[in-house]
Every structure is written in C-alpha cells, then in structure tokens.
Length: 288
Image 1 (cartoon, rainbow, N blue to C red):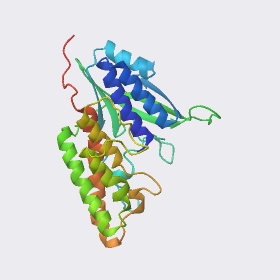
Image 2: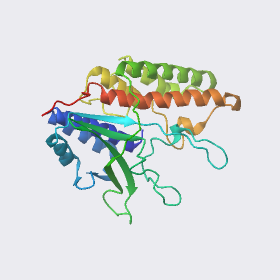
Image 3: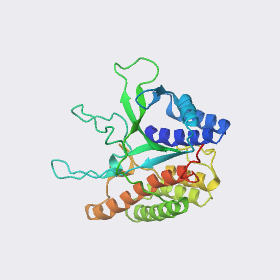
Image 4: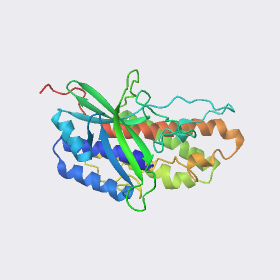
C-alpha cells in the first residue's frame, strides 16, 4: 500500500489513542509508521493561521475539545480522457503524492480536496484535513524529500460512505473470494496465494500476524478492528509496475469481469480501512 495511505491511517489511529489518553499506544503507532516510511517526508498541519507538527496538532485538537478522529474516502468520479478511455479510480484515488498535473496545475484544491483525508469532530462541528504531498525542490542531498501538508478543506456536499465494521468485513470477504476464484481459474493463482487468501485468513482470525510490509500488527484497537485493517492491507494489490491492476485481464474476453471484480476489491479494501479506523468513534462530542 502507498506510504501516503499508510500515513493517513496510522496518523488517525495515533490521534485517536492520544485523545483517549493512551499516549504509549500513540507513540508506538508513530514509531511503527516511521520505521515503515523511511523518514522521507516532513509533515505539517495547517488551518490557514497556524502550522503544527503532529504532536502539537493533537494538543490543539485536545485544547479545542475534539472527541473523534476518523478517516474519510470520497471516491472520485471517473472522467474520460481525450481518447475516450475512462481511468478507473483503482489506478489513481490513492495517489496523493505530487498533486499537480502535467502542466503544473494543482489537481486538488480547497474546494476539491483529495479523495482521502482525516475528519475531526468537535462539539461545534467537524473539520476535514486534506493531505498534499509535494517533492521538495531543489532536492536535498540528505533528509526528507517530500513535504506533506494537511490543510483544512471544504467538504460541503460530499456525503460520506458509512459502513459498520461488520458490514465492511463481509463485503471485503465476498470481494476477496470472488477475485481469488477468478485468479485461480484464469490466472496462475499467484495473487491468490500471496494476497487474497492471506487476507481472508486474517479476516477469519486464522493468521495472527500481518504480511510483511503492511500495517503493524499492534494498532492499539480491538481484535475485530485489527483483523479488518490487517486484512484490508493484505488485500491491497493496487499500484504501479507489477501490481494486480498493472497486469490487466489474462484474456480480452475477460475484461469486463476483471474490471468488475477489481473495482469491487478496491472499494472493499478502501472502505475496510475506513470502517476499521472509524469503528467506535463517537458521532457527537459532549458539550464542555
């Protein structure tokens, strides 16, 4: 899974732990993120007036009586290119880095935030923090090469897709079994062996450890939430060269089925992350 999505998930979980007073879990989750990301980015949070690092951002949330931290995924609306091809969202929605197009124009703006973000709930309402990844120019010889800024963005008229953790787990298992069967029947079973079946095992509790390179196994959450998050990470097969979506259908006549099951899995793992992170977060904050 991309570092940008890993960061968003683990930052939200670390913020949740901090808000409930579990500073040890919060620090552990941040350490796990740093060990996986390699320290190639400098991160800040800004509301237009102030700029914070992660720790001072969480302190600011506490000072403003925040009671819940969630992640949100707002699927993009596919747009046809000049040649009429519609790029499926499983190719692009998770790519939060370098958010400019080939002409240098910004893709996401305050009024059109990135598909993924962090939502914070206060007694007076909510804020949506949209991440922006940019390469540091000129490229430094040492230290971070990415600048990541989470900024408050407009979410008017963007209804969130809401599923319970149980619903998300059922949808994920259905999608995993369908795409695994497709791979076994029409492919060589490679992806079933290294991703789809391990993810199903994680959902069912028969594989207690996460596959290497994904989410850390100790997330400071309940076993059911952890299973959903780890299974979603294990089932993530989307990316660039060599990924499931890079290979395409094994035969042209299977294109429609391939597109359907691939989109189904992308949505299922995406909303599996959302439901796993958000489960148990209060909908309304008590008035201080």
